Image (cartoon, rainbow, N blue to C red):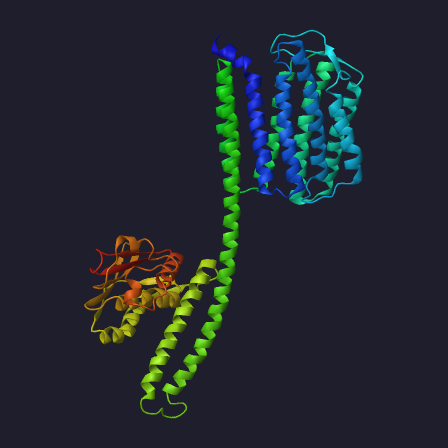
Length: 528
């Protein structure tokens, strides 16, 4: 048998595989997204019964004996009845998350459906078959009086479902209405195709040639529902992508079934198909769990940041009061302090100011992370600002016996930006760090203009930085291994704040070092 003939024979089986993979994956995604929702559960039940209906339709014309073919026809009607029932259930509950079913649902509808399911398995619906058709062609059953009951129940449920869903869609507004309409059109198209090619043509015009294509009629519903999910962002893009990849892998796995040459190969490849299908569902479930965990973690972080912000403001207020009181005592506002008290007060004042600065840095980092910091940008001379910053820090450097020099070319250093933010959190921070982390030696601050880029650099002979530390120096709370040993007051927020401010001005910041003990250079570039 050539490949073209093989593909033609197995085309209907390929459609069944695609339809089953698509509808089961879609139903699983919707169920796993919120298993407590009655709509999601109903959609999953409907998806499973749709898959079962497609498989039973395929088996209906694949048996080669009268007895097995007759039972295949009966079981197809059995699944058709359940398919119509869950079609109705989905339309009835959509789009509610919770619903208490009325008494008629339990005491009237379910008994009618159950009775019909039993009825279609008896000779009252199909008493026999006219003549056994060759394998791959549809055999016509001999209808009994019970076929009218099946038609009434199945068609009644189908038409009622469409009417309910259409009326529900008209009552909705906005996104909910568009979702309901897409679901309605998908169900309507599927129902029309099934009724036309699986009921009207076979029973009225004796044309059963389209029955093998029944799985194809499921695909419009899968496609439109998937479109509604994508279009209205009902699920995370990562979940949708995972599901799509799982669907493609499952379909490709099913292709192996088509080219199986013996019973053992069919069983093996069909098992592989089911394993991949359920594996894809498990991967989607794990992706959804990860998405939920990420959202919960994000909410927790947000609550923690809010709490830290509140505590920080309170602590900053207390420190400001202490600082004010200590400053007043040190300056003699309450009279000259007794001998020996002034050095103690000045030390306490310095510690209080340092504590206030640390809290301010934490609050600043929090605001930068949330994007609530605003910048007042105006032209200023960067060279003048750097020179003033170096001059302010010279006393501290001299106290540690460090030389602090500033070098700049004779050029224009005009820049547009937030002068206060750049001064307080970039220039001052980098020079202050160089002093803190240089036990002995020198610090050189430089400024130059290269190709309309203003390059500010602070080079020291301090403790240096290794490659591992460079990776998280500019992260929130990031510390080098030596930082807290040399500077116990380091919060790890200074360089993070500096980077955020430099980024906001279209610049870059980096650290250079040949390694521990060999000093470091911090370089900031601003656009002129």
